[in-house]
Image (cartoon, rainbow, N blue to C red; front, side):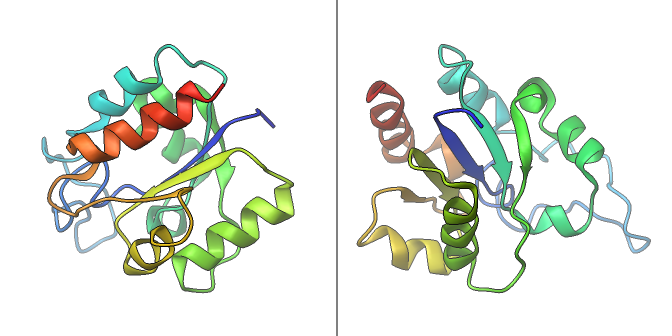
Length: 150
């Protein structure tokens, strides 16, 4: 595993929370708003090819690894798996996963309520606002600071 790992949520991070994504048959719909903020994350991570991504989003329950890799587009080659334990709250899932993998240098980008609470005491949790996600200047600054720590 890489020295730096990004736990990544999709809804409220890579596109606005509530963006229509799945039809009534459980299939992904063609919606240009989906992953509309992905280019921001691509640019942030571009100078740091060693950063790997673990999907913590609920999308991990809907799609297999190959589909998640496709959804990550230009970041797909950084895919390092999904959070395996599915037992809310999300912040606890991420902490458990990081401990299980023996990770020491990681952050989580997420808009989940439990991540907002965890972010108050643990800077590895970067809480996103569901209407701004990774487009937030504050979120981008936090990611840049983590990346700069080498």
